Length: 77
Image (cartoon, rainbow, N blue to C red; front, side, top):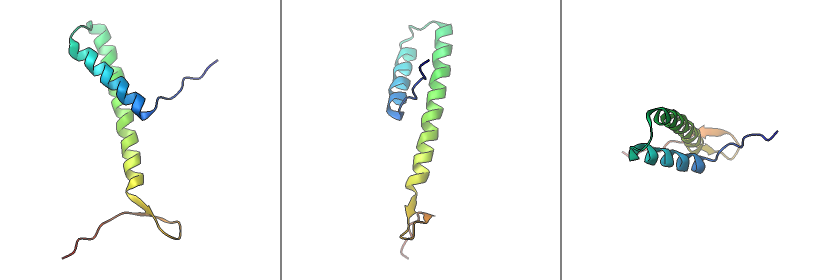
């Protein structure tokens, strides 16, 4: 059996855009629209979760001793 490959973030965004275009066309019957909407919401959540994880990683800096620390910028007064 082949395993279903996880889509990349970019592939998920493309799929989401495709679904939105299809739904906006008004040419999708109600049952298909509900299925597409459900899939779109799942993709949107997965993308949002990924962005949150990446954002958290970006907001950390690696100190010389290898310890991760929250990144903050001190404003001059």
